[in-house]
Length: 96
Image (cartoon, rainbow, N blue to C red; front, side, top):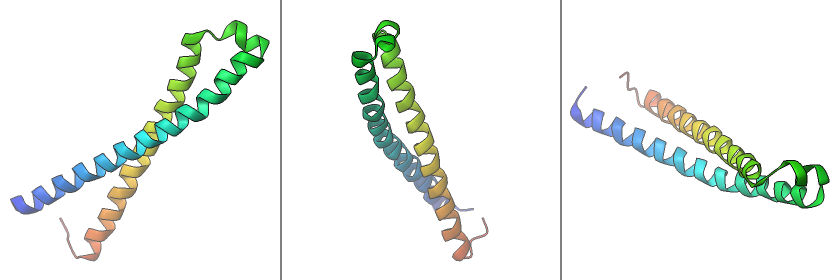
């Protein structure tokens, strides 16, 4: 395998990982807002939540949702991009 092919594969891997990171970050922002609204509303309206969910617990709920969304979406994006590039290479007749 030549250095040009290796450089091309490295560039493709960097692009795929960057796409995954950006998609994951966008999903994390959406998940943070989607988790924060009911968490804060519940703490204000529900007596059980008011007495049992301190600010640390609220932050943990929100950050867990954001972290999970980031990793799930980033993983799916990277895998989809790799699969797409794999099919693209197989149609071109590349065997490496």
